[in-house]
Length: 428
Image (cartoon, rainbow, N blue to C red; front, top):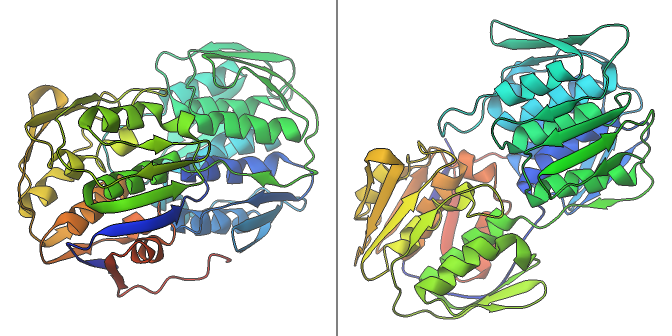
């Protein structure tokens, strides 16, 4: 079992550089199979999700190499083959192979994906969209079978009943090579969707409107890559380090960020009393004294990201009063609460999806468990704040989403160690 050990109380100072966005990467890698040429990515995060996606690619005779943030994928000899269930089950983002395979072959067979247990994340909007494009979908024994007739996929007008990042990305991938015009309405507007559209457009796709609530896709017969695609910075990783710096920093510069992607988050920190200095591609977090309580409501982008409600929770414990969080995206995303309480945090889940965070003058190190990626990030920040030693079990969840977290925190002055871990090479 992977564990992270933290000796708390160390003040943070210096610089930390943010890597490529996990939530872009896990969609871009499946999207690469749509190309008729090798594909190259830069600033790819060295996380376990990348390794699992490479294993899935290999099962289809798609070979890849990954070194120093540079990932090359060669889909030119791709074959239709069953995808490895263990890798599919390990991360939810594997469902992007539904859209990618459908766009490539006109059919897809994918085991129902796994990933973090943060409450229901249905794929009904994905299936609705696939059917509108002319596909038939059936589910049997946790496996989804998607097929099309001899005419293949055709353009359609699709209105999402609920804003969904996953469905938006999947339908973009399924539509880019479909015949005719596809119009997606009430879509998600996250930066990662713009990143996917940029990648596809640079290969010859015709995707317009990414970043707005309506996307228009004119299908093209062939996609070819001719340039390296640099993945956008990870706004969730950035928010996590900014939070840690606000909680325990004596001056930390967070580099390689796009501040516009973080405005709903940084505005809350400024409201709390953190005097951030925001420049073109970095954010300086000064030492912070008195903090004020705030109310946070998560919402689709450009609202406050659900992925940051857990990491910010320990910081709210330093505020002088009562803070509240309402997660409208995943109200069951509360598995960090019981662990923070073990450390002395005064935090509770109330009816109606409300999380109440009271001022908690002293956190104490404890043995805790990371139930999923962002819950684990909250425990790391709490461990940095706590007196004594914190041991985080099931820390492999954290390593799925945060690259080189031990090294980055150590370089900032923290005392962090990864125990009992045997990370395989990220090149299968």
